[in-house]
Image 1 (cartoon, helix red, strand yellow):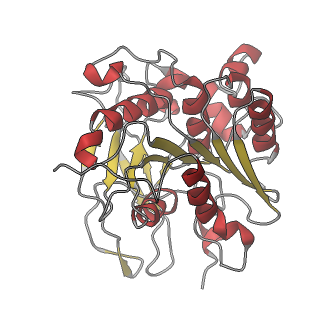
Image 2 (cartoon, one colour):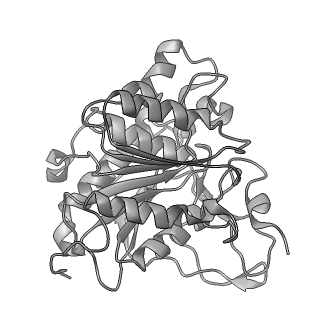
Length: 335
């Protein structure tokens, strides 16, 4: 049996799934069913289209029978994949997979997490966001504009999904954790021109959970690959500061739940510690879980014998202390 974590994360940019993928045999196993409900983020073409638009590509990276590790690159239609629970608890999460800003890692940091949360009553929206290296006009803010728009659309459709607009949080992994932190600290930044009524709604998440997240854009702490794709390898100190989440924490930054393994060889645990210190200084509620073992990109793949395998359960308990998740009365779902 191949060790899944090492099979997935020989590099930081290990990845996973696309929302539109035919069922079939891959590596000896049937591909898991993709969600059938999709929300396009933008009416028509996404803003700031490059002169040569990227071409979306799905790649299966797993060689383990029955296990899937699909990556998606060249996102040209940013969108949300919707995971509806059997009974909505009134809370929703925007889930942002990682991939070093070079790809989207969707199976274990997207689909798997969404299914686990939906089983507990959460309505989950997995974000396929545009990648900053593809030449979009918004540059380093292109993924943030997709995340802001996603939050607003979720709130605009709250009644449809049986959720409450004030109970929408965000959870992200690795580079997706940077985007999660960016949304938590720069939710009000004007990164795109409004295109509809939803854009009048608040993009601030109720809670944020950056998991083994890229946070700093300053070397040597920064993850070099994510930094190069987001702001460029020769970025100025001013550009580094503008996209380092700890330096953008403010009084309205939502409560945060942080997870990192101290043996992470890809993203320095100092990223999480620096972000935590900024949250504490701003008196923003923060819960931090540092695990001795786990490496990078573990998501839900660790064996039960590893303490870090329990992080999602800890998150759901913590979310409950902030009014999200199980135990909260849900409005009646429509549609």
